[in-house]
Image 1 (cartoon, one colour):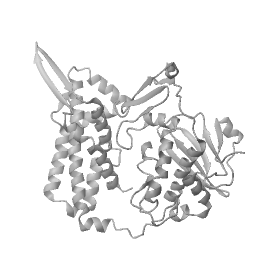
Image 2: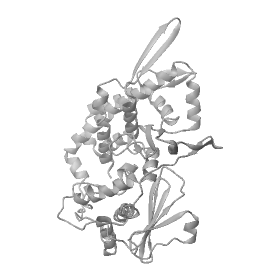
Image 3: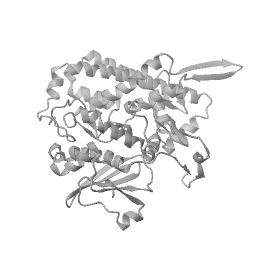
Amino acid sequence: MELLEKFRKQYHKVRKVIPELKEQNISSLKVEYRDNRLYTDLNTPNHALTIRFVALMRRFLNVRDDLYYRKVWSYLQKHFSRCISNSLIDEIENRIVKMNQGQMQFTVNNEVFTAESIYGLISEGGYFNDVKNIQKKLNELSQVPIIRPFFWHQFLGYTLDAFYLVSLLFDLMKKIEKSKEWKDFFIDKSESPFKCIYCSRTSEPFTSQEHIIPEGLGNEELILPKGFVCDTCNNGILSKLDNYLLKFEPISFLRVIYTQYTKDGKLPKENYQNISVNKTQPRNVVFTAKDKSGWVKNLKETADGQVSFSIDVRGKRFDPKRLGRSLYKIALGMVAFDRGFDAACDTKYNEAREFILRGVDFPNNLLISMNGKPNAQVRVMHQELAGGTGFAIDIFGIMFLLNLQPFPVVELRKELEQASFRIFPLYNQI
């Protein structure tokens, strides 16, 4: 997916929050001196809305992200310099300087803290990441009575100023899109196939891209361009299969913990029979038990300072066949992504296509790990086997093994059984 397309998509997610934010002040700081003491009062009226806004803006303000505003600005200048006037360059550069300086600067022990450096301290010192030396420094600074509210005011103000900056970049993009330079730059010499890799039809509309791994799992990279998947499949059965995967209880639980926000830009939450799980901040999750079975058990602190515990989540009985269809949809999409359209359309995947679209029996098995170690990654690995196309799909530490072809049949070998895998047939057994 092109950088500017990702920028546009993320910007629209943030923009949905702005009308609600405009109805209130995202951050107001009142400072009062009385009785020979300095008092501060930081007010952020809508806590959940503010957090949602800050989380969505993170991609534009994280120097490690490809949507970091300086990278996008450099990209536009590099490729479309003729479309950018000197006056606009000055306006954007001046806004960057003012944004990074902030409304005021602080000097503590001869060290100057700007809005940009304060944002970095809070972000890396616990809000988005937990860098120990930065966290220690932030805790030491917070001992100064007025620092904490001032820093948070700067953190939120910096994020809001950044939105006005990326709005300027977005408006510039819209102007560039009308230019000859844009058309010349994005001319595609190769024609899109406009044939669906799932249903093989060519007569359907092809107006949308296809997220191979559901966007709700944080996927912004593994995307098939327009022309590979028809709108009927994309918005119909494939969307339903993605939703089933997202609602599969082990994945939905870990999704709340490991993803910053949902597809529509909201903080993730899930509701189960005996417990609800709600992300209230980027690194804060609230568990609410509905009965005793949902209480936290075995709570203890580990040697590295972390906390471990166990929770029994009571959910619905899952359908291995439908889960398999969701995973096979990912597998066929990855073939197209890695090896191209022709490879995905090979007739050896025809039975997989029928399985994905219509749920007909598929003469193979799905292996699922029953004892994985949770982590924030979603990975897909595959290789050609003797007569098959093997896949290992790792979603937050839950591993799935499958073959996109009927043969060879995936078996539960001794070493896999010892690694706590279980086997689930993808066909009705007599």
